[in-house]
Length: 183
Image (cartoon, rainbow, N blue to C red; front, top):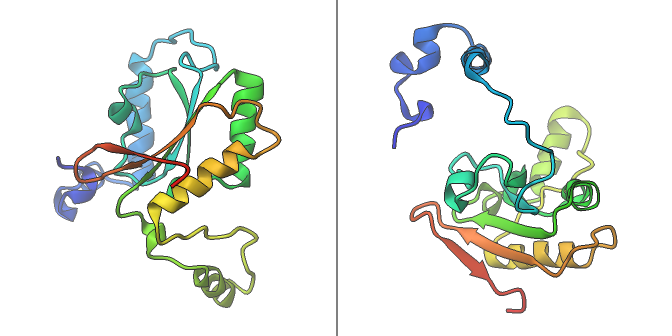
């Protein structure tokens, strides 16, 4: 599979079209909008599921899970970690928009496995202010999925906690491996 990121600079789409990557994306949106037809969907996901996953560009969640537009809410961040902001989104998803199932997806080869909380200190040294957020780095992806499942299952704001499952996506095979929350 070839992506625009893997093309040589001289043949990259932004080089041939001109302008910045953002300009290229806005132009792509104009082409998309010209053919767009409002599907008339509600904001409530058809499958009543929220998927929390890493922001890694290698994860095509809809394709990997066989999802279509309107099937789920997708919440993505670095590592797919359940943070306060993730809980905020899940709470809105469940309480205002009808989701009942939570699927957590981390993946192999995650960049957070190579970071530490020292990243925050480095940022503080560089800009003179420490971020208020934690890096949430981890060394054991399975254990981090367990921790994320536990954060969802114990949060008082989330009313639907019976159907919370966690997985690790293998970026080389495309397969999901389910994580036992009690291991």
